[in-house]
Image (cartoon, rainbow, N blue to C red; front, side, top):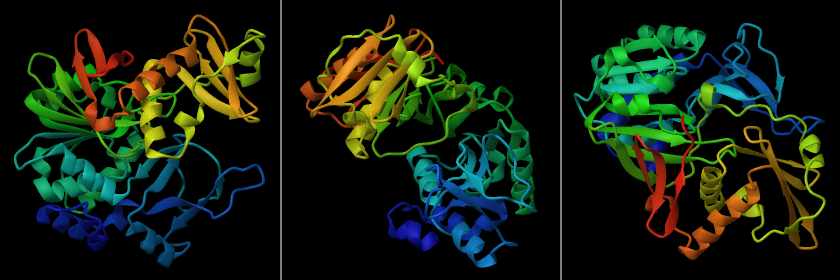
Length: 382
């Protein structure tokens, strides 16, 4: 595994490679789920449990592969002595693929002696890598799920690592150990939590993944200014993390109920919804920009019709394919697709700029995503 992440160009620092070679990942993943090749009759992913007792070879090979291993669904713990096959479900905890863990630590530019806060202990594997590289004394790791932290603590202490651990919500950081020189999160937030800025030393750095209810993602590396503000640029790449539980999307009900209240007439859409739903790097980036323009919207597709639903304002929109174009109908106080189309048009006029050309400013007035050739976008209040 260490050779693979080095070959892929993820690890350049020899000390991080030694950490990968040293930390026994299998001790942090006694059980996990892997997806079956085919879905079930309802189109749901079939998740197969993997443990040493069920199939030692498969378990060990997966533990030392560069892949994400799902350890929990829907916030419900698994009895790994008698695990069962799952059909569908929302992953709520995992052991992130090692190459991404190392990429995040490298992007954070963490150095010897830095006081570090890690949000989202999870299985504890990433925590162990940091302890091996930086020493346990400088690392604080928090986890919102008590059982997850308990199992991670057993693996960490059993492997000889002793970081500061606590059950806490990452939305509020961890004041008892502040200030920190570096903060890193293994979950995503709708906006930068102000507590994290307040707990970062002047000149310190915060590496977060921003996400939202359209499942648009962007990583941002912020530098604390020392006056309660922070600023930094978006990073390139298509990285996604599970949402912080307090920032998860609410249930929105039946799309047909929302569509029934829309106006009978509509218009031809200026932009196809496929611009933000396609499996491309540009669509990944555009989905985050669209989400910043309509932060309370959620999206689903039923029978080829795209539904946008905003449970906060009571607004909705549908986009229906119509002979090579899309027909949009909207209702409620917020014209959701109008907002998204405004951003898509501005993006085109600006020459389709990449993520790294955007900067995020966080201060008392709010959080603004800025680009020199596009209007500012406001992230939602955290």
